[in-house]
Amino acid sequence: MSRTESLAGYLRAQARKKLDRVELRDGGRNARSALALLDATVYVESLDDDDPQLVALAEVGCFGPEGAGDFRAHEEVDRLIRLWEAGEPRQLLAAIRSALQGSPA
Image (cartoon, rainbow, N blue to C red; front, side):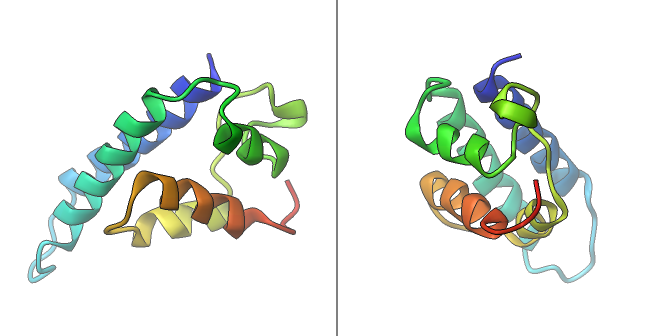
């Protein structure tokens, strides 16, 4: 599986979780988050595996040893995704990279 497919699959699965989540009085937070994650999924699917953003994520350990495996959501990434409600897909990828800067891979 390519980096693109792996990351897009993760983001799509997280969006589905948000859509399935029912919380009284969430003010539409889960719906906004799901839409933002689906937007990011479509964006990631448009990237080539050697796109600089995906290479940067590989360098911080998101795709396993030597950047050749499936996307691995570290605790920091899971926390970021849980809270992500809005923003450009590019910003999400940059936020993932920033969250992992200096974290053990």
